Image (cartoon, rainbow, N blue to C red; front, top):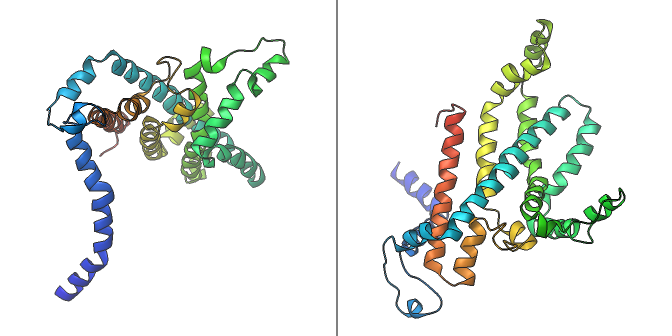
Length: 288
């Protein structure tokens, strides 16, 4: 038994080392740096000091931080909860029991946005929403004057872009869950006179509740970390109109070179993700 245990430990050693080096150690360093004045320029760059909760105190007193939290919540609610989760479920429901060819065609169209790299999606959306972009050309056919979407409606633009990019994931999760529902249950409900709405409310949604919760957590965490899409499309602007927490964190850490402050913001972002996930699980009455 001891030889087998030693052999198993030797095989696991590379994985454990990689986990420590690329996961555990960075987390520990991030937590430590959040309580320091670590910076790339100025006196703090030469004199690293432990400053306790000073970064967090400055953060909660910073009006830009409060604005970034608000922007993050708006982006999360409209692009993830209302956008990807709801739209993904509707698409999956509409494709349920459709013929294979139809499902493949619609699936390819929707999934194309998901498999496209985020930076490519951002450039495509810039071309779509720009002053001379596709959207203004389309509305021009109806006699509507061009709109500077990325300047006048920047948050709406990035929300639509993120919905287009991520909805396919939710659709595939729900599609798989819906296919697992026994048909005889829904057929029995139909025979008993249940309407489509009652079947959806009392049979379909309760039976895929686990998939809904899992998908909401994954989509929430993914949306909270969206940076490339927003930064490429708007740079967080104009002003702070689209400056979510990831963009604010980047500006503090890599533009203002305040690494300690930036890592403190990243910890707050992590806490928000954990709280949001727990809220979803509790609200859906799923046991943790």
